[in-house]
Image (cartoon, rainbow, N blue to C red):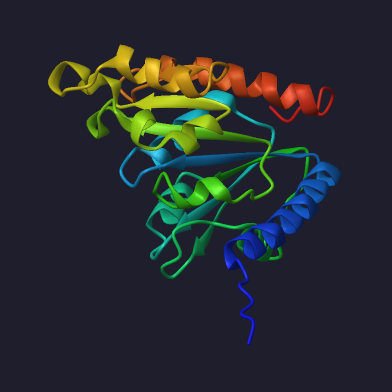
Length: 225
């Protein structure tokens, strides 16, 4: 008897791509610009997001937080007055288009607006799943080391921009900025690389300016950010 092999990974990816395309159309109709934030657990994604929104000051903003469990980060954002919503995957190591579509049914998004989605904390699984975003921001912290572009090339290849966080720790840990930059550039010559630390709030302004320019490329007259 002949054996039929079905590649479930390709099947799931195709289904996700179809759902992501529908999300992109929905976001376009609503005048919503979507940022997908990727990085490891502990890279400082939530802190970066808070500072970015403060620097960007969009007309309206919404946040979707992705975690395996808990709503700690969502509660933190809500205490700051940020309109945040939680997705708990229960073990799945990434967000996908179906999860985002599901939470959108509970949200009342009014455009023009910025929607930031903080993905699950790792540099592997989320890379393969389009969730309807306009741009990906990859966050990598100084304590993680400067070898991340060499160990996890796919996430840096797909990045719209790369952000090095916790740069105030550079004098105290083994982090080679030139080595990190060389690794990123070998994979992604175009993506800007930003260095930020919460110790210096002005450092987030260049990231906000870059993102504002990306928003204007898609929504030149909407005044989202």
